[in-house]
Length: 216
Image (cartoon, rainbow, N blue to C red; front, top):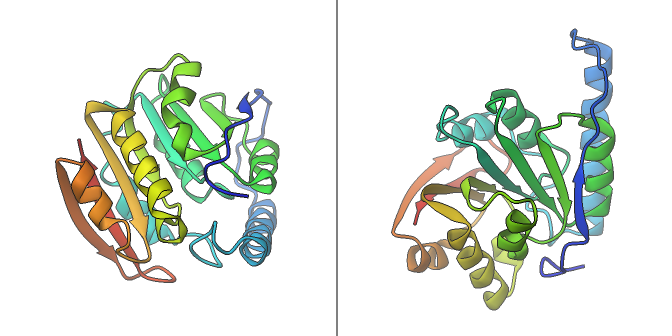
């Protein structure tokens, strides 16, 4: 399985009636399922995941703090995995906005289909390399933000460069690419491709994460 595999289609998740009241045992059970699924897939596909456990809340909050939620109407997420960022994005997302989550791993796609019912989520089984055609297929044009944690360091140079360029081309002129990594391998690609690249660091994550905030 590679990041370059073409997408097989998008899934507009159905609306269900859900009791929104806090249910601590249910939340704990879901968190346990997320951790087990994530760890199992790290062992199966270590090059597709950057860490053996999902991102920390500190990393999530640091990244999402860069988003102008009042303005954003189209947000893309690369590699949503078990939904660590996805659920937090949906909690903050404007009612009229959409989130396009592009995931290669069929286990993660199935998990998100079963556990996420928000109609603003468009879940796509496919590759980040195809972000432009995916947005066109959904009739959404360009993205205001693209958020990514896919491990660029494990990709070949051509694929890494191709995804970075496709990302820039998929953004609006005022859009942003928000990316976290565990190495600096993608930084030269970002600097060649984007007009502005701001660096950050989040130590309260396992492993500590490098943050890149990029503008066309």
